[in-house]
Figure 1: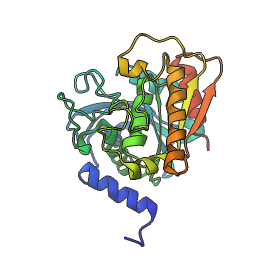
Figure 2: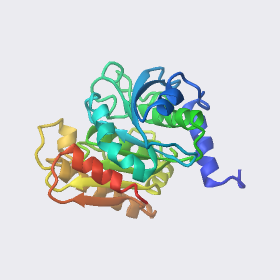
Figure 3: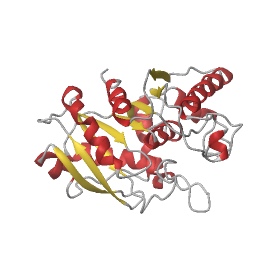
Figure 4: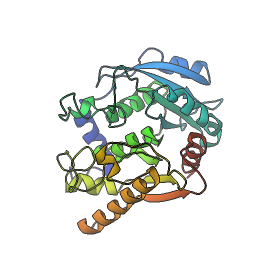
Length: 294
């Protein structure tokens, strides 16, 4: 084990937690993406066993070094197509296939999608292979293998409910193969602290100090609009995080900073604020995609 690289260790960990490698060659994946520059296909996830419609758009030509970028929809799954449409103008400059998986309410009711499908109906933590968070990894494998893409990392951005999903991916699956994750305008958070109960904090969750240290080492950007201050009344645990999305995001990042100091570990996360922007998907998703031009 001492001779393994960090990337190989992360890949090995992923195979263990997701129940094995993903079988490629699902009908419709490669054929649809190569046939047209935008559209959709159905991904049958071997972990959750749920079918997922995946909207996509891509540049006019594909190459072995074409990137994969996930754009995660809000709390309503019908916005997945809109998320892909917003990102379509960036595919050429990013040289990326944009994938917007649609986690339908039929299989992910209530908060199941935004909370990563980590809990069953009784509130018990499901096996990691069934989390929607790990569906992203298996979808990445299916597309990458079917299209013979060379890159072994992807990027992921999420707006609103999608940002709830993305920051949970970083916290609970820190070995995932994303290069950069951007969580834009989340309404609720898992605070990286054991003083709050899961799913609003880490107490009672699978995250220990080692996992959180790895999560802090990953490239996460918390993107907030400074006018995102109008919000509905939410559940008590969410309202204790702050009275609006902007306040909750600031407190989330401050809590991460404090926790990293307490643990004596570096925090590689970043906070970025879009001035004059409220809870609007187009400017926030576009700003998130700009952060992928590294």
